[in-house]
Structures are given as C-alpha cells and as structure tokens.
Length: 190
Image (spheres, rainbow, N blue to C red):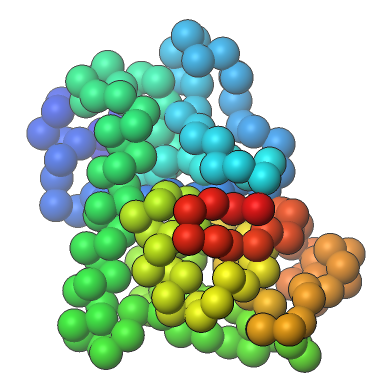
C-alpha cells in the first residue's frame, strides 16, 4: 500500500488519503509493545474503549503503527489530533453540501444507528476525540447511551431508553460484536 513504512513522505501526504479514528471493540490487534516496530497506535478513551488511528486511500485502509511515527516525524498525540481535525473538516464539507453530515437509521424500539453521509469514515470515530465528541453530543442531544461495533457503526439509545442486551443487539446486527454501552458526556465516556 502507498504510504507504508519505508515509503516516501510525499506519499503520506497525498490528497487521496485521509486519517480517521476507529474505536476497537474486540482484542487489540498485533503486538502490544509500544517499543516494537509495527505496533498499532492506540489511544485509551476511557470506559474500557481504545481507538486506533487509520489511514484510508485509494489502496484501502490500514491501522497506523509505530513505524508511521518515524516516517512522519510525529507523535501519537499529533496523529490523533490530525485525524480528528481531518474528520471535522470532512464533516464540515458534508454539512455545506447536504445541510447535514450525519444520517440516522432506526434499528428497533428505542435505538438507532448514526452514520456519516457517503460513509467517508466509520461513525464510531465521532466519539474518539474530544474535538469530535462535543459536536457529536450537540447533534445527538443530551448525553445519550451509545455503543460501537467492530466495523465502526455507532448505535445510540433514544432519550429514556436503554440499548438491548449485547447478545440481542449482536443478533440484530447479523452477529457483529458490540462494545460496552457508554454514556457520553461533554468531556468523557462513562
């Protein structure tokens, strides 16, 4: 893939690639030693959830690793912020073009799925950085209970409702695993 370790710095900054965040609901992929090459860059979000930093482009999507820190001459925090800013910019462009950047799809009594128009990145990334969490809370209105799926879907309980038990929810989603139910607040995941 273009932009993998050993590639030119120019390929990392090409206009056909973008960074985004994807919370991880299952086991953490790859080695977990932050001093090893090829270790996935993961940021703890709280409440048992971590997020990976991903790069999408013409050649597909991949999780950024410790190798990317060397090639890009940056830090994990810098890449985390860069990904959030790219996502905010994409949401702004979608809102300018469509009047909104998010879509909702009712899945059952008391809960729905939130998605990003045109599926530019998984909606679960909307809770993966404080810069994204605040505007997401405004759109979702009032500290909702959410969960994320392994593919990056964002499921939201409507006010006064609870999400179904994880087994029932997984069955509704065709067997896709879900993370823990989280309550969103202005500054944290609880």
